[in-house]
Length: 422
Image (tube, rainbow, N blue to C red; front, side, top):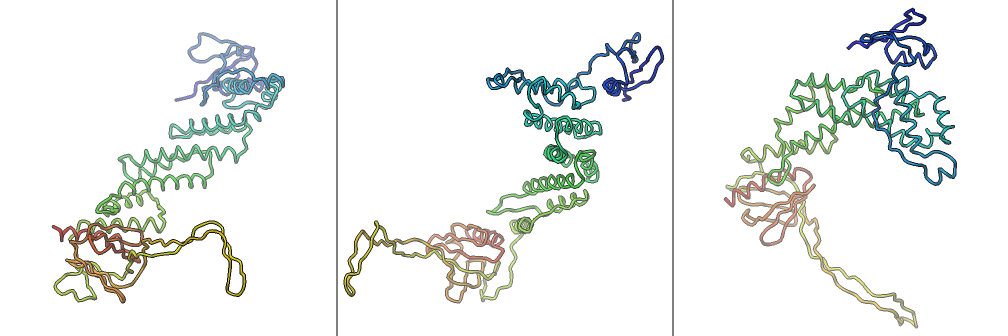
């Protein structure tokens, strides 16, 4: 929509036509006089600039509530803290140039109130600046005028470039996360999503590096949420549909995005996809070094065997005690001294060897110890970050420590136990 122009005349001769903002700026600079006349389309005739209605700005933060001076203000002969905020808000609402309060106005305000408003009210002025940045970004587009207005507001409040950029970064990070999520959830082609995402950073008052950094953090947050949503709990472990993962990564690549996953996260995604297949596909026999006869082998790996062993320790209790040498081997002891035996269960690695899951049983063949029990004895299987624990109905529980693959082993073992129990 074209900007409405106000026509200005002096001594009966039109001298120019400007937007209202420019007229106000020229008035403040003394280039236009109250005796000059103005006219704009829709007016019946020309009027003097003296009666041009005052501009009332719509500020992106509310007018503070009025509050009287406290005892200390009265003793120091100054106006209240709130009076300073009110005066600043009123100056901004009528400023000829949006969001700009001239230095002379600040000096006059300080003389009137009895204190440096920018210094005393700094925290609230910073809060206003943050609200302004958030408001300008709320429509998902940061136009050049809003960028200029923020620059004026920063100068008015005495904020240097680093302080202003820090606030811009906070506001932009919040806006970017919401805006990006809105775009990414739309049912539109990936290339179009990328175009709309790029618009989020247009004209933002931040360095290119900061915009890129913020985009990266927002992308990563979105990826984490999407991948977390793909994860499902099944058969005691995390599983992920490989087709869904592949489709998601294809969409990401089409948007020209390169997500970063640390080694641990990538290993988790890979394991979840393998478990998805293990939970659904028929179990496949694998080669085995042990002679199993007619029994098939469905899992084998080199592991360490751990057993819960009863360990007894001696502990002393009592108060302060000492002994004094009397003569030769004789000593005199004073104070109390008691010894008590304590027995506790302690998990210890006892052997290393080959673990095998057959069609009927669990077999462990080690150099020092061997185990062999049928699936009917298994009550539960618990997975840890480097081991699985098999809870049996008799004979004690056993723990097998794995170099890797414990989650896959647990899925296969549970399936074999269910099949054996019918």
